[in-house]
Length: 166
Image 1: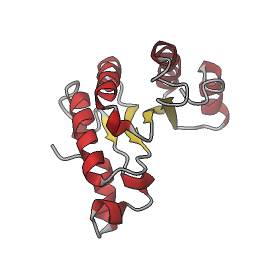
Image 2: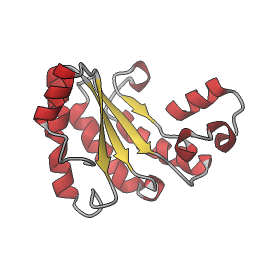
Image 3: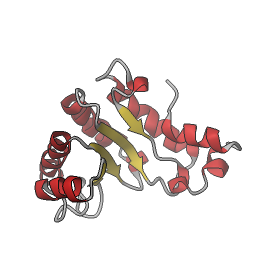
Image 4: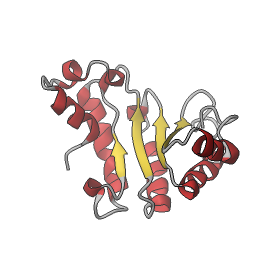
């Protein structure tokens, strides 16, 4: 997990108590010494953060933090399958399936999200009603959503970033 030297049980509790946070984004590192190089070590760091967030009543975003996730569809599907199975009963656990797509076009990003979100949906009857919520990153880190996604209405761009049609 990125910044795992700072993210632990005590920090989550402190952020809740002192900063009164209601949402924590847990960036799960894929590259740069993360999941690709040390999957067992990195996966072992997650439960303490997620379960502490659940315990203290804050939302936690499980963030697949990568710029080239579209090249790792099977790894992402395996990861989110495990996370969705484990945390399916907790409405305060959210999923961010592709953080910061940078140079991909909308077709690549949408194809990736379609595959990964379908795995998450296998573990809930009701993704649309927030039993499990997936945030789907958009092209160019959201900076050029209208241009890259071919949409001209900002409301539609926001919707496209969050929903992959069934």
